[in-house]
Every structure is written in C-alpha cells, then in structure tokens.
Image (cartoon, one colour):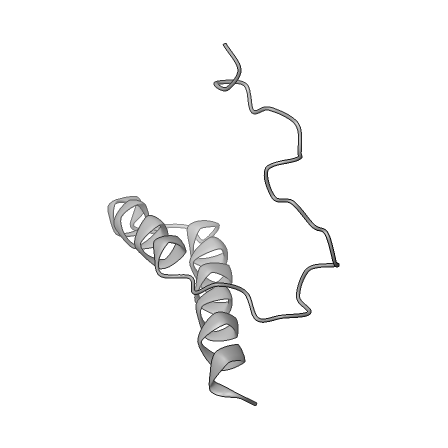
Length: 68
C-alpha cells in the first residue's frame, strides 16, 4: 500500500478502535475525550479516489448548532 494511503487508513482504523473502546464497560472517557479529537485532527487529506468526483463536504445539511 502506498504511504499516502497508509497514514489515512491507519488513522481511520485508530478512530474506529477508539469508538469500539468507548462502548466497553469501564472505558476511560477522559482518555477518549483527549485522544479522539487529536486523532481526527491528525487525519491527512484523503487520498485521491476516496470520495467521488465533485464531492463537497460542506454541501450537507446544517448541524443543530449551525445556521443560527
């Protein structure tokens, strides 16, 4: 796998692992609250071909706290 894909996939897998860990009894939510945003912020730009041509991540619906 090319290095460009490796970093992206590894980070996405770690985010998935954190999500699974959060569902376990006795999960440390302080750890989750610190690590999850750090992992998400470290995501590199997605490799070409991950999203369809013309995809705009800002074109979706507003979240409840937006647009007010």
